Amino acid sequence: MLTISQLAAHAGVTVRAVRHYHATGLLPEPARDRSGYRRYDAGAVVELIRIRTLAEAGVPLSRVRALLAADDEGLAAAVAEVDRRLRAEIRDLQRARERIARLTAGDSLVLPPEAVAYLERMRELGFPEQLVAVERDSWVLLAAQVPEQVPALMAAKRTQVEHPTLRRLYLDVGELADCAPDDPRLPALADRVVAFLEADMAIRSPGAQDAEPEPLVSPEVVALLDAAFVEAFPCAPRLLRLLEQRGFTGWTDIRRTSEPDRAPARPAGRAGSA
Image (cartoon, rainbow, N blue to C red; front, side, top):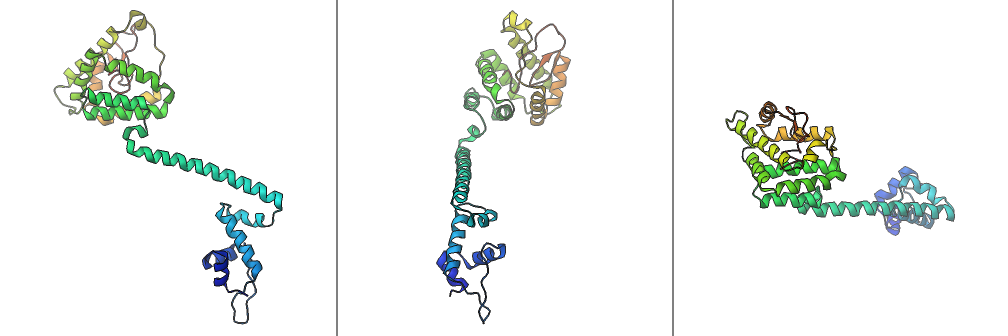
């Protein structure tokens, strides 16, 4: 006859585990000897090894009892189910490892490759890091909300940022983006933005100006991007008011209000025109 410590040693588990299996009813408690100690036989060792094997294979303890009593066919089906679950867990862990590995890759963790390349191009062209950060956050939002539209939006963005005049205007915006709401330079900044919008309209064909473009981003996403812009720049609320005085409304999707017969301008400042 074996003591609980000897039983645990033969089965390769801890005494605490044996007591837990007793408490859950998986392993019946044996009769005690005259001294009040539990005494186990070889059958208890076999049963405990079976319990340990199933538990280590990933079978929930709540199912172990049923499997211990199952016939060969039932046990095979249960083992197959455990195997499917473990394979799914392995796939999840592999994906988690891939995400962890990408943590060292900076922006590429949450952005598609074309957006990462665009941000690097902004840095090459001399855009201030504050403006790059705002653009990065915009593309993070877009990639999460409308991933299928990112390639088209990014293609337009790259075309705009490579245009010398538009790039210079965008750089002008970036240089004053951190100014205070009462900065006397803000009216001139608004004039630069309007000049940028006019330049954007001028380089498009007359046919494109007459047609209403299909929106690539929903009004809800536009509102989210606009809110992020207002939060990022102290001067944003006043700048938007100055733009309204000059006949334009919005920011991510700036639209002309004073000349309704003209097509909406391309988005400016964030996910739109540069």
